Image 1: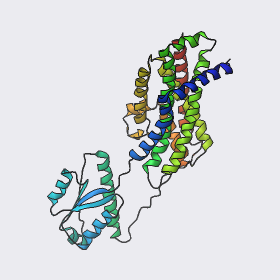
Image 2 (image 1 turned 60 degrees about the horizontal axis):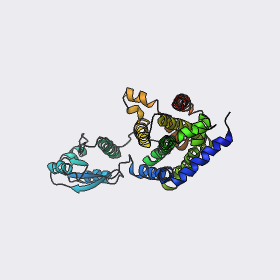
Image 3 (image 1 turned 120 degrees about the vertical axis):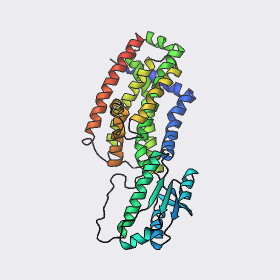
Image 4 (image 1 turned 90 degrees about the vertical axis):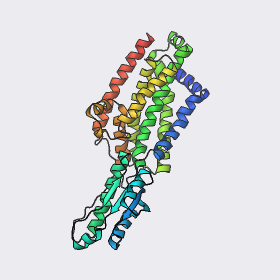
Length: 365
């Protein structure tokens, strides 16, 4: 049986230490805000206002209309007009523009005859993501302009769900919440237990009537409350700064967030059992946290990963919690629609807890 008084005594001791330890306070209170602002503003997949250099060999009303179509979009902006096709490529060489547009002198003649014509786009491929986006944008705008010149054509009608404006911040913010909850709880939990080892107080605690389970629970109670504070803080700031609303159930979000916290706390405990110093704990924490950011689908889609990497990502709790967060916050779906990631997360958590507790007890023995 767990003795509540002994457990709360450990929790009070940990709270006192957190108040005295400035590093813990910074990690607990300042780091979440910093991460939210960093990823919310700096990490963006939105590509707007790409600079164009234009060579207009036709110099006609039709060619100017095409250039205006490109320039009036939110994605592309004419930066300069050049006198020769070679100057377009030079502009890309010097990095002044990302896209070069070459309109041939026969453009208008063929267009007026109803014959197929072409426009050449030179795209800076040094950044593959921007290059692919630029190619898509330019093709989309030209196709739309071409359709406007014709009559009785079939026009596609796209209805964007969940994130109609395609703002990357609304995709990133839910992932940031999971990232913050994971990082803070793992690091603080690991540091808390290893700190007792460094000070030599772990042996003193073991000699008392306190059981290993009471010690662990007492240690993590303050960090559970800190994690809930961080959850509320990121949700509020996400709403105020980035306009990200919770479309689904807040109760379901908090419940599943609590379950996810359990896995992060268990991982922190496991790291503490194989670390002798806080420096080792920090290195091991980063060795887990950094790959989890990449493999969990927070930044890059898992579907684009090689099969072996995709398989590894299935063993990271944040992978499933990201699906849950985006499902509840962006899509507004409920338990039924999220049953698969919830079941996977629960199964993974059970394994992590069992392994962590066994390792912790073995370390104490």
